[in-house]
Each structure stands twice: as C-alpha cells, then as structure tokens.
Image (tube, rainbow, N blue to C red; front, side, top):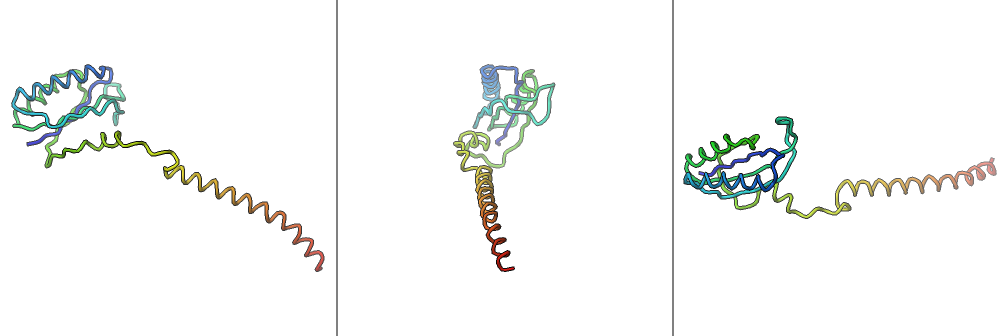
Length: 154
C-alpha cells in the first residue's frame, strides 16, 4: 500500500533543521518496516489561511510503502512533533515516478515576457493605438481639402 503524507513545518524553523526532522521521521518509518518511495521538499510556501498567526510554512511530501503499522508510526511521530503545524495523509491508487506537479512547475524554465499572452495583448493594443492615431491624423488633413472642394462646388 502506498500513502502520501504532506506536512507543513513551522516557518521559523531553518531549512537544515526541517531536513533533519524529516530524516528522523523517515528513520521511524523504516524502523517500523516501511520504506520511503518519494521524498520532496516543496520549500517555504504561503498557507491557504493563517495557522497560529503564521502565513507561510515549509511543505514536505513523503510517499511511503508498507504495512499500516509503518504509516501509524509516521503519523504518530508527526503528531508528537511540535514543529509540524499541519499534516495530511492519503492513500494512493497508483504510484508515479514523476516529480509532483509543484516540482515540475519549478523545474520548467520561465517563459520570456514577450511570449506571455498579456505581453502580446499589450503589444497588439499599442499597435492599435498607433494605427488609430495615424488614422486620426490622416482624416484631419483631408477634411480641409474636402471642405475646400465643398465650397468650390457650392
């Protein structure tokens, strides 16, 4: 059975201490007969809502494989850990070797500003304004000629 556990560590804890705490949790899972299939550190991210007057937290993902006893050992260790402010464990229906979508998004190179839709829309809008200004000037020059012609025919 595969289980995915995501837990949020107090943002006041350093990244090194967060890694050490995660190593301790992994050791407890392995001692209980489980194994860690995937481990990802998502870094410091904003929380969806304030928890204990904190707006950010260090997010960690652990995917475990093993008997329910190993999962219970992990959940117990997390519940006793004061530095963890929230956790969630779910059962996985299938295991993927690919990185999580969050890690993939970080790994993708950033698109240049010119390629973004908003930049293209801005560029098109500027071109339209320039054309409108050019058209506005052209009829203004033609208007006196038309009025001269109108006076001549009258």
